[in-house]
Length: 433
Image 1 (cartoon, rainbow, N blue to C red):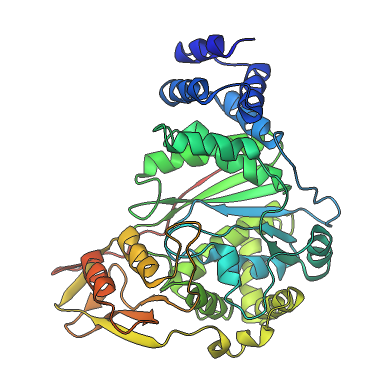
Image 2: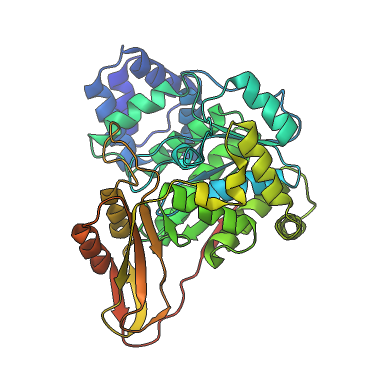
């Protein structure tokens, strides 16, 4: 088998076999296929596309390139949730204890984040004492006992994906739906879950800007999961504005606590119930999605979700008293209010831009070496569709520096105020099964 022949076959629109795709992925991972040939193949795949079977085979070849996590020692159906990212996406912090509170084992591998705020692991580390790096033995024991554990990626998962993604990043082939889908799903499948719920974001603050593209990506990922024996579904949710009110690590933990108490922002509460209902249903802990939702609502109203959150924090060395006293979370030295200059209705919040404002404060990483300040961030007070009057607070800046003119300017640029009434945006656009 020669790589040049496989490039030509893909260039001409032919479907490659599992053996051929395995040859490409293994060869590139071990260095026998050079960058220039893999670049050529990726560009051919970008323009010609890949069939669902090719995409599933590509995914499993990347899974086979490294370690896989065996969760068979955990009792019950293990359901993972993956979000394609956004601004203020606090769902994992809420969902992990909420879903665990109704008996579904949540074995979550989460990363640190580049971008507007930290990844899920960074957010949990805003809790004093919380240890994200735990052994696989402790991880499995904790899920069996407390029903939930969160740790950083362990072992050498999907090295082929890391190498191929780095090449896609510099060859203009990131925006290929089959390549994106196989990249995301290879990590999910290597992580050992039995079923997967995907939260595919769409809008100005998401990677997929339009609904058709988001649906295509969701369908490709659902097809992969189902083709390789993982029960998979996707929710397409709106990211034309940040989710919830908080953008920043400790601020998002506080907002997650409010949501678990039933007092969180309406959009975050609703999306967590939507995603969580599908997780509980796929875990066979409810006979329908609506029954699953009722169970989750009861876990919030009874306080069981908060109690599970406390048990989970304590099991990983964290100070569980922050649940009852969030003032123990890291707090910034200054709070600066950004006031509305005109009357009207919020018609747009540029999610990317307001996320960048939080990163400028230190809430996120511009590079892998950047230090995150867990205490800083933004609290939004007005969202799309809300009425504003001059002098109303749009955003409160939580900062450890007194002068934040650059952040204020970025916030004003992010908000658009219209004179006429504006509808609140739709939160969930579609479900893909």
